[in-house]
Length: 321
Ligand code: DON
Image 1 (cartoon, protein in one colour):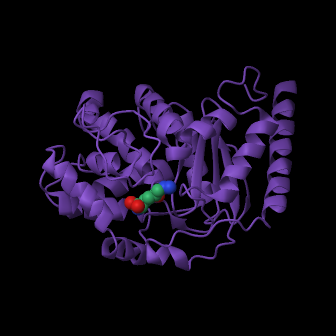
Image 2 (cartoon, helix red, strand yellow; image 1 turned 90 degrees about the vertical axis):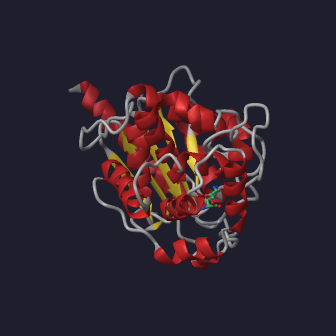
Protein backbone atom coordinates (compact mmCIF):
# COMPACT_ATOMS: atom_id res chain seq x y z
CA UNK A 1 0.00 0.00 0.00
CA UNK A 2 2.73 2.49 1.12
CA UNK A 3 4.81 1.58 -1.95
CA UNK A 4 2.05 2.34 -4.47
CA UNK A 5 1.17 5.61 -2.66
CA UNK A 6 4.86 6.49 -2.84
CA UNK A 7 4.90 5.64 -6.53
CA UNK A 8 1.81 7.74 -7.19
CA UNK A 9 3.42 10.70 -5.44
CA UNK A 10 6.52 10.31 -7.64
CA UNK A 11 4.45 10.19 -10.84
CA UNK A 12 2.55 13.31 -9.74
CA UNK A 13 5.86 15.04 -8.93
CA UNK A 14 7.24 14.08 -12.38
CA UNK A 15 4.07 15.28 -14.06
CA UNK A 16 4.13 18.60 -12.19
CA UNK A 17 7.77 19.23 -13.08
CA UNK A 18 7.17 18.33 -16.75
CA UNK A 19 4.34 20.86 -16.93
CA UNK A 20 6.52 23.50 -15.26
CA UNK A 21 9.49 22.85 -17.58
CA UNK A 22 7.19 22.89 -20.61
CA UNK A 23 5.66 26.22 -19.56
CA UNK A 24 9.05 27.82 -18.92
CA UNK A 25 10.72 26.59 -22.14
CA UNK A 26 7.77 27.30 -24.45
CA UNK A 27 9.18 30.77 -24.97
CA UNK A 28 12.66 29.59 -25.95
CA UNK A 29 12.98 30.42 -29.66
CA UNK A 30 16.62 29.65 -30.40
CA UNK A 31 17.24 27.40 -33.40
CA UNK A 32 15.35 26.76 -36.62
CA UNK A 33 13.65 23.72 -38.14
CA UNK A 34 15.81 21.72 -40.56
CA UNK A 35 15.69 23.13 -44.10
CA UNK A 36 18.17 20.97 -46.01
CA UNK A 37 15.12 18.74 -46.49
CA UNK A 38 12.80 21.53 -47.72
CA UNK A 39 9.54 19.93 -46.53
CA UNK A 40 10.83 19.88 -42.94
CA UNK A 41 11.12 23.67 -42.98
CA UNK A 42 7.33 23.95 -43.33
CA UNK A 43 6.58 22.75 -39.78
CA UNK A 44 5.29 25.08 -37.05
CA UNK A 45 8.57 25.83 -35.17
CA UNK A 46 6.77 26.34 -31.88
CA UNK A 47 5.20 22.93 -31.58
CA UNK A 48 6.42 21.47 -28.28
CA UNK A 49 5.72 18.27 -26.35
CA UNK A 50 7.17 16.28 -23.46
CA UNK A 51 6.06 12.67 -22.90
CA UNK A 52 7.16 9.84 -20.65
CA UNK A 53 6.29 6.17 -20.05
CA UNK A 54 7.59 3.93 -17.28
CA UNK A 55 8.60 0.31 -17.83
CA UNK A 56 5.29 -0.55 -16.11
CA UNK A 57 3.33 1.31 -18.76
CA UNK A 58 2.42 4.41 -16.70
CA UNK A 59 2.51 7.48 -18.93
CA UNK A 60 2.32 11.24 -18.73
CA UNK A 61 2.55 13.99 -21.33
CA UNK A 62 2.24 17.75 -21.81
CA UNK A 63 1.86 19.97 -24.88
CA UNK A 64 1.59 18.68 -28.49
CA UNK A 65 2.06 15.04 -27.44
CA UNK A 66 -0.25 13.72 -30.18
CA UNK A 67 1.04 15.92 -33.00
CA UNK A 68 2.68 13.71 -35.69
CA UNK A 69 6.15 14.46 -37.03
CA UNK A 70 8.74 12.46 -38.98
CA UNK A 71 10.98 10.23 -36.88
CA UNK A 72 14.10 10.84 -39.00
CA UNK A 73 17.34 9.53 -37.42
CA UNK A 74 15.61 8.01 -34.40
CA UNK A 75 14.55 5.27 -36.87
CA UNK A 76 18.23 4.28 -37.12
CA UNK A 77 18.18 2.90 -33.55
CA UNK A 78 15.23 0.61 -34.29
CA UNK A 79 16.73 -0.64 -37.56
CA UNK A 80 20.02 -1.28 -35.71
CA UNK A 81 18.15 -3.38 -33.14
CA UNK A 82 16.42 -5.31 -35.90
CA UNK A 83 19.70 -6.04 -37.74
CA UNK A 84 21.28 -7.30 -34.50
CA UNK A 85 18.18 -9.41 -33.80
CA UNK A 86 17.92 -10.93 -37.31
CA UNK A 87 21.57 -11.23 -38.38
CA UNK A 88 23.64 -11.03 -35.21
CA UNK A 89 26.40 -8.80 -33.84
CA UNK A 90 29.22 -9.99 -36.13
CA UNK A 91 27.30 -9.37 -39.33
CA UNK A 92 26.40 -5.85 -38.17
CA UNK A 93 29.93 -5.09 -36.90
CA UNK A 94 31.31 -6.04 -40.33
CA UNK A 95 29.32 -3.08 -41.72
CA UNK A 96 29.27 -0.56 -38.85
CA UNK A 97 31.48 -0.27 -35.77
CA UNK A 98 30.59 1.28 -32.41
CA UNK A 99 32.97 4.26 -32.39
CA UNK A 100 31.67 7.79 -31.81
CA UNK A 101 33.08 10.04 -34.55
CA UNK A 102 32.86 13.51 -33.12
CA UNK A 103 31.79 14.53 -36.63
CA UNK A 104 28.39 15.62 -38.01
CA UNK A 105 25.75 12.93 -38.74
CA UNK A 106 26.07 13.25 -42.51
CA UNK A 107 29.87 13.21 -42.76
CA UNK A 108 31.05 11.42 -45.91
CA UNK A 109 33.59 9.23 -44.12
CA UNK A 110 34.31 5.59 -43.32
CA UNK A 111 36.57 3.81 -40.86
CA UNK A 112 39.40 3.16 -43.33
CA UNK A 113 41.25 0.82 -40.92
CA UNK A 114 38.32 -1.44 -40.15
CA UNK A 115 36.86 -0.98 -43.59
CA UNK A 116 33.36 -0.17 -42.34
CA UNK A 117 31.16 2.74 -41.22
CA UNK A 118 32.17 4.18 -37.81
CA UNK A 119 28.84 3.47 -36.08
CA UNK A 120 25.17 2.78 -36.94
CA UNK A 121 23.88 6.18 -35.81
CA UNK A 122 25.64 8.34 -38.41
CA UNK A 123 24.18 8.25 -41.92
CA UNK A 124 26.91 6.02 -43.41
CA UNK A 125 26.36 3.34 -40.76
CA UNK A 126 22.59 3.73 -40.84
CA UNK A 127 22.45 3.22 -44.63
CA UNK A 128 24.72 0.17 -44.27
CA UNK A 129 22.34 -1.23 -41.63
CA UNK A 130 19.19 -0.46 -43.64
CA UNK A 131 20.79 -2.37 -46.51
CA UNK A 132 20.55 -5.45 -44.23
CA UNK A 133 16.73 -5.44 -44.39
CA UNK A 134 16.00 -8.56 -46.39
CA UNK A 135 13.34 -8.88 -49.13
CA UNK A 136 13.02 -9.63 -52.84
CA UNK A 137 11.95 -6.07 -53.64
CA UNK A 138 11.38 -2.60 -52.14
CA UNK A 139 7.76 -3.34 -51.27
CA UNK A 140 8.69 -6.41 -49.25
CA UNK A 141 11.45 -4.50 -47.48
CA UNK A 142 9.13 -1.57 -46.69
CA UNK A 143 6.68 -4.08 -45.24
CA UNK A 144 9.43 -5.50 -43.00
CA UNK A 145 10.26 -2.02 -41.65
CA UNK A 146 6.62 -1.05 -41.06
CA UNK A 147 6.05 -4.38 -39.28
CA UNK A 148 9.00 -3.59 -37.00
CA UNK A 149 7.46 -0.24 -36.09
CA UNK A 150 4.07 -1.88 -35.54
CA UNK A 151 5.65 -3.98 -32.76
CA UNK A 152 6.92 -0.85 -31.00
CA UNK A 153 3.86 1.34 -31.63
CA UNK A 154 1.06 -1.20 -31.39
CA UNK A 155 -0.24 0.10 -34.76
CA UNK A 156 0.92 0.27 -38.38
CA UNK A 157 2.52 3.71 -38.77
CA UNK A 158 1.86 6.18 -41.58
CA UNK A 159 4.58 7.66 -43.76
CA UNK A 160 4.78 11.37 -44.62
CA UNK A 161 4.98 11.12 -48.41
CA UNK A 162 5.72 14.82 -48.84
CA UNK A 163 8.77 14.60 -46.57
CA UNK A 164 9.84 11.33 -48.22
CA UNK A 165 9.67 12.89 -51.70
CA UNK A 166 11.48 15.99 -50.46
CA UNK A 167 14.23 13.81 -48.98
CA UNK A 168 14.45 11.79 -52.21
CA UNK A 169 14.70 14.98 -54.29
CA UNK A 170 17.49 16.47 -52.15
CA UNK A 171 19.22 13.28 -50.95
CA UNK A 172 22.41 13.54 -53.01
CA UNK A 173 24.68 13.65 -49.98
CA UNK A 174 23.18 10.36 -48.79
CA UNK A 175 23.60 9.00 -52.33
CA UNK A 176 27.27 9.98 -52.21
CA UNK A 177 27.58 8.12 -48.89
CA UNK A 178 25.68 5.17 -50.38
CA UNK A 179 27.96 4.83 -53.39
CA UNK A 180 31.04 5.15 -51.20
CA UNK A 181 29.69 2.15 -49.24
CA UNK A 182 29.17 0.25 -52.54
CA UNK A 183 32.67 1.21 -53.73
CA UNK A 184 34.12 -0.19 -50.50
CA UNK A 185 32.07 -3.38 -50.80
CA UNK A 186 30.29 -2.69 -47.51
CA UNK A 187 26.79 -2.84 -49.00
CA UNK A 188 25.16 -4.67 -51.90
CA UNK A 189 24.74 -3.00 -55.29
CA UNK A 190 21.00 -2.49 -54.74
CA UNK A 191 21.91 0.83 -53.14
CA UNK A 192 19.21 2.92 -54.88
CA UNK A 193 16.54 0.61 -53.43
CA UNK A 194 18.22 0.76 -50.03
CA UNK A 195 18.31 4.58 -50.16
CA UNK A 196 14.59 4.64 -51.01
CA UNK A 197 13.98 2.41 -47.98
CA UNK A 198 16.15 4.68 -45.81
CA UNK A 199 14.26 7.82 -46.96
CA UNK A 200 10.98 6.01 -46.18
CA UNK A 201 12.04 4.92 -42.67
CA UNK A 202 13.09 8.51 -41.86
CA UNK A 203 9.67 9.74 -43.01
CA UNK A 204 7.63 7.51 -40.71
CA UNK A 205 5.21 9.60 -38.64
CA UNK A 206 5.31 9.35 -34.84
CA UNK A 207 4.24 11.44 -31.86
CA UNK A 208 6.12 12.32 -28.67
CA UNK A 209 3.92 9.79 -26.84
CA UNK A 210 4.98 7.13 -29.38
CA UNK A 211 8.66 7.93 -28.80
CA UNK A 212 8.23 7.62 -25.02
CA UNK A 213 6.74 4.15 -25.58
CA UNK A 214 9.61 3.14 -27.89
CA UNK A 215 12.08 4.39 -25.28
CA UNK A 216 10.31 2.52 -22.47
CA UNK A 217 10.42 -0.72 -24.50
CA UNK A 218 14.19 -0.48 -25.00
CA UNK A 219 14.68 0.61 -21.34
CA UNK A 220 12.67 -2.46 -20.32
CA UNK A 221 15.24 -4.83 -21.85
CA UNK A 222 13.19 -5.09 -25.04
CA UNK A 223 9.79 -5.98 -23.52
CA UNK A 224 6.92 -3.68 -24.50
CA UNK A 225 5.48 -2.04 -21.32
CA UNK A 226 1.86 -2.22 -22.43
CA UNK A 227 1.62 -5.19 -24.83
CA UNK A 228 4.10 -7.33 -22.87
CA UNK A 229 5.52 -8.52 -26.19
CA UNK A 230 9.30 -9.08 -26.44
CA UNK A 231 10.30 -6.76 -29.32
CA UNK A 232 14.07 -7.34 -29.01
CA UNK A 233 16.21 -9.60 -26.80
CA UNK A 234 17.94 -8.27 -23.63
CA UNK A 235 21.41 -8.38 -25.22
CA UNK A 236 20.17 -6.42 -28.25
CA UNK A 237 18.46 -3.87 -25.99
CA UNK A 238 21.73 -3.46 -24.13
CA UNK A 239 23.64 -2.88 -27.37
CA UNK A 240 21.04 -0.32 -28.48
CA UNK A 241 21.35 1.54 -25.15
CA UNK A 242 25.16 1.50 -25.31
CA UNK A 243 25.39 2.83 -28.87
CA UNK A 244 22.69 5.42 -28.13
CA UNK A 245 24.72 6.71 -25.17
CA UNK A 246 28.02 6.87 -27.06
CA UNK A 247 26.83 7.84 -30.57
CA UNK A 248 23.15 8.81 -30.43
CA UNK A 249 23.66 12.57 -30.22
CA UNK A 250 26.48 12.70 -32.80
CA UNK A 251 29.17 15.33 -32.20
CA UNK A 252 27.29 16.42 -29.07
CA UNK A 253 27.38 12.86 -27.59
CA UNK A 254 30.27 13.53 -25.22
CA UNK A 255 28.69 16.66 -23.75
CA UNK A 256 25.31 14.88 -23.54
CA UNK A 257 26.74 11.85 -21.71
CA UNK A 258 28.58 14.16 -19.31
CA UNK A 259 25.75 16.54 -18.40
CA UNK A 260 22.59 14.46 -19.00
CA UNK A 261 23.88 10.87 -19.01
CA UNK A 262 20.83 9.17 -20.54
CA UNK A 263 21.13 6.92 -23.63
CA UNK A 264 19.31 8.93 -26.31
CA UNK A 265 18.71 9.40 -30.00
CA UNK A 266 17.74 12.58 -31.85
CA UNK A 267 16.23 13.28 -35.26
CA UNK A 268 16.12 16.39 -37.48
CA UNK A 269 12.33 16.24 -37.33
CA UNK A 270 12.71 17.65 -33.81
CA UNK A 271 12.36 14.51 -31.72
CA UNK A 272 14.66 13.24 -28.95
CA UNK A 273 14.02 9.95 -27.17
CA UNK A 274 15.81 9.06 -23.94
CA UNK A 275 15.94 5.60 -22.37
CA UNK A 276 16.51 5.28 -18.60
CA UNK A 277 17.36 1.58 -18.09
CA UNK A 278 14.87 -0.14 -15.80
CA UNK A 279 12.88 3.07 -15.37
CA UNK A 280 11.31 4.19 -18.66
CA UNK A 281 11.33 6.33 -21.79
CA UNK A 282 11.33 10.12 -21.99
CA UNK A 283 10.64 12.01 -25.21
CA UNK A 284 10.58 15.59 -26.42
CA UNK A 285 9.29 17.07 -29.67
CA UNK A 286 10.36 20.58 -30.69
CA UNK A 287 11.56 21.22 -34.26
CA UNK A 288 13.91 24.13 -33.46
CA UNK A 289 17.39 22.60 -33.97
CA UNK A 290 20.93 23.56 -32.96
CA UNK A 291 24.09 23.33 -35.11
CA UNK A 292 24.38 19.58 -34.38
CA UNK A 293 20.88 18.86 -35.66
CA UNK A 294 19.51 18.31 -32.13
CA UNK A 295 16.34 19.92 -30.72
CA UNK A 296 17.27 23.04 -28.68
CA UNK A 297 14.30 22.80 -26.31
CA UNK A 298 14.76 19.02 -26.23
CA UNK A 299 18.26 19.33 -24.81
CA UNK A 300 17.09 21.84 -22.19
CA UNK A 301 14.22 19.57 -21.10
CA UNK A 302 16.59 16.60 -20.67
CA UNK A 303 19.11 18.78 -18.80
CA UNK A 304 16.44 19.94 -16.34
CA UNK A 305 14.74 16.56 -15.82
CA UNK A 306 18.00 14.65 -15.53
CA UNK A 307 19.12 17.18 -12.90
CA UNK A 308 15.80 17.24 -11.02
CA UNK A 309 15.31 13.45 -10.91
CA UNK A 310 18.95 12.24 -10.90
CA UNK A 311 18.34 10.36 -14.14
CA UNK A 312 22.04 10.21 -15.12
CA UNK A 313 22.81 6.50 -15.60
CA UNK A 314 25.75 6.81 -13.22
CA UNK A 315 23.70 8.49 -10.52
CA UNK A 316 23.90 6.12 -7.55
CA UNK A 317 20.59 6.84 -5.82
CA UNK A 318 17.96 7.43 -8.42
CA UNK A 319 14.59 8.09 -6.69
CA UNK A 320 12.93 5.75 -9.21
CA UNK A 321 14.68 2.49 -8.40
O1 DON B 1 19.45 11.40 -43.74
C1 DON B 1 19.16 12.48 -43.27
O2 DON B 1 19.87 13.45 -43.40
C2 DON B 1 17.88 12.58 -42.47
N1 DON B 1 16.87 11.73 -43.02
C3 DON B 1 18.08 12.15 -41.03
C4 DON B 1 19.12 12.94 -40.33
C5 DON B 1 18.83 13.15 -38.86
O3 DON B 1 17.75 12.99 -38.38
C6 DON B 1 19.98 13.63 -38.05
N2 DON B 1 19.64 13.75 -36.67
N3 DON B 1 19.72 14.61 -35.89
